[in-house]
Length: 313
Image (cartoon, rainbow, N blue to C red; front, side, top):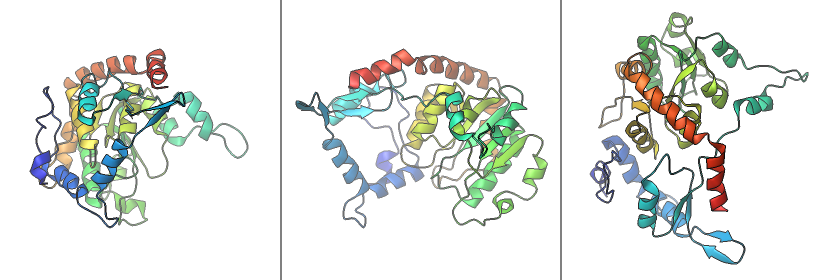
């Protein structure tokens, strides 16, 4: 199967959609169809999981179905389509909301003496104006190269906004934190930005009143956490389903994707700065924020989400 097969919207989607991969993303999908060292391709293994999926109901019979961490308000047209494609019911489990930020904070802010210690990055956010900070986190497995890290840093600098960056060290980099970033970057941006190579409490950072935008790789878990906080997205997807999630969020009017070269997937500082400013500075960002808040109101409706869980049981 050639990459071009995945670089266009599938014909079996009966409604307008931007569900497609760019050339470099499609190449990754094509490679997943090839047999690997295990003797089975990744896609064959994934399909076998779907084919064999079973859920025991009342211990008396098996009902074959697929349970998807999503809800009809977020994906109103997908459940029927997926049920037809897989020839078994695809049912929503709701978005399975993370715990409330206040509850989660109690889990990690106890010092050795038992006193409460608020993480330093949250204290930094406390000092920032409302909705002024872009929180940057690309997950634990994004294949971020040193060159990517430099372009992202310079893009944030060009954008001229306040930022909190949870930076995971790219593979092949020195243990010296200063070498991760362009020369002089932290000094030039020290009055409006923080780069943290340690752990950052993401749910709390997203829910903080100072956070106005999330720059994300569009992992599904991170996307849901952001939607639950009601903030718009700047999206920099890398692998697997991340590009499709990013395009779905663009369709829903709650985010902007960083421009990439369609052939090799490269991005530059200018593309980062344009996307960040479009969401955080320009008028279009107000529209995105409005849609994000409206969607938040639906997704954090506890009764509605519990109804999905009840229907699965």
